[in-house]
Length: 284
Image 1: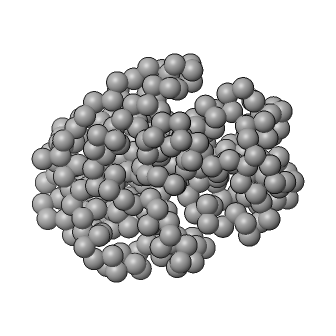
Image 2: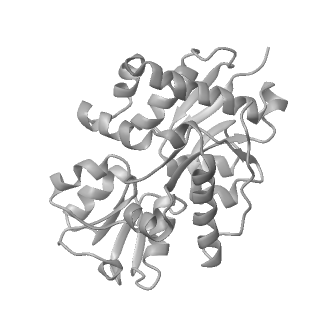
């Protein structure tokens, strides 16, 4: 009997919504799945150690992971109008806002931080500190740090902390590239079939089926999504899913792959990541 697939993704509503059917054995023909829930800075490190068969990571981490993993063309988070925000206590705007300041980021190999480094290339902060993303807004509001780079549902809640958006890195990215912003990727171990009997292409087909099931019956996953949404209220959960689960979740397509190539190509040219070629994989 094949071993269960070991999987890790965040407890955020977009991930639990997308993977509900797969996790709960509702995808015909898919193997059993065991899940660990962790923020992306944790899963990036776990993937570098090869700890999971399927794992949600930052696109920015791919150059360090593709020796062990294959990028799946579905299940991830790309989109428009969904980029990270740079938040400050004072109303201000532009890269000069962070020059010489202390900035908290949600992980040093996150897509958010890579975009931040490209955006602030000529206005480097004095210090960058890594904090769990849910701690960043309170720390900025309390004056513990000068600015914070936030992701996820913080787009909908930062005003509650009296904070201001100095920059929307998604808007900046889209205005300079015309492409969606690549945030989170789903990877499968290249040797997945040896341990589980499931090829990466077959895993992609199962993930896509889970996406389709989520859209076909959104109510089916509601309790599961809310149980992992921490202190997020229902309307914010719905906004979160609506923003991060879109056509690119079902299939990266031409624009999705172009966005990944552009992000990592720009970063490699700037010397921020090693050069990498992203292979294309089609689901069976």
